[in-house]
Length: 580
Image 1 (cartoon, rainbow, N blue to C red):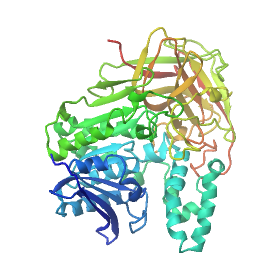
Image 2 (cartoon, one colour; image 1 turned 90 degrees about the vertical axis):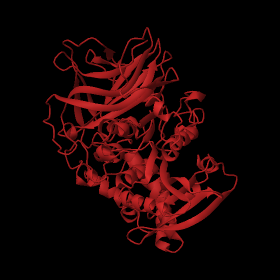
Image 3 (spheres, helix red, strand yellow; image 1 turned 180 degrees about the horizontal axis):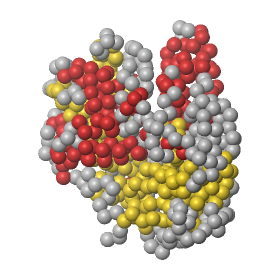
């Protein structure tokens, strides 16, 4: 394997797209030898700030060429940026250009995270044969249900903070030197970013002139609350059955895109067109929030130990080993690795498995109970494995003007207003509009690794409303550490494509997807489930009016009733890993 001692750097190399627009790339390659297998990033976050980081130098020293390109309409590249939309065709054109370069041997891999993971999947869906392997990290599959919306609710804190703090601000900054109006807009946007809390509270969602001018795709998302052709055209999961390239999917238990990370792995394992393609998929999940794999501990406010970090597991070395196998053809044992490797919080250890969900999982049902007053941490809610009998329901008033606040979880992309990770939930659990169900202290360790869901029987005085659920690990000291959460917008309870309003007062079954976790509840700890109707500003507030989502500028309160009885057995289903 070549080992480069001198690196050639080419800055701002113009690459023509099929429509004549030029996208610009920086190229790093060994000065001697070649042609080389090539690694590529396509980023909206400024190639000049990304190309010296992570594994780039290590890869070039190992004999790879590395190419980092600004996507269309971002930083050095020409054209108009339209989030999510152009990456498939532009990815194909970039791959085609690479194969024509004398220093590229025609074997290309892609890597990096978030939107740079999205560009990998879109390039893969383009079908270009040069793309041989990818390592998409903390990214999505279905951009409707795992980027812009979740459970039918708009991911407000992510969408607004990402678009403003990471996208629009750069777009305006590029123009302000030559445009006095843009300079004024820039100052207005900075004030809005600094006052993000006030912006979260504004109604309707589609309201801001700055968004319209500099990030119109945001309003496109608001205009498509249901899964329709707009989303289907971008959906990675719809292409799982035609992709054969190996993918190492990397995610975090507290990442906003955990559902997509797992979905891309399980979708390819089930639907890839050949047995070899199905076998060459990998899933790696740490305790990380969106940037935690590289930033390290704490994740939120919790230290999961040095062994939990990307540095400790040599995440860059794992990348290179993956690319050595699939781009160079080295027989290095990658195919013999267990397909699944996950970090188990609580016990702070890594576990491997042959599949997801883990083989041998014991799907345990833990039921909600109370004497009719599970409201708040001080209520009488209980959680155990006994099927409920005749029990009074619990009720609370959900007021959209006083929503249940977000406290960590899967958040991005403003560390001031949207810091993701694990935090003590007791402040939230003091509220009367939060139902709290807690188990007795555990006598033995209970390892919970896998998909999570809550089956909730509830009624509402509104024709449309939300129900949320959260799984919590309660430590003996009382600290309540969030594991994961979910939401369901009532109109989407049966279908994300065909909304259906509620009949007020009618008991209805809701399935709330909490995605997944990997946590070992220790002896003396307790399992807790929270039920509420908002998690704000992570998700937008349901105004309870039944109007088209995102359009209402008025709200009404709703009386919510949660049932737990023999007829209506509300419960959480935990994926328990049996002890050896």
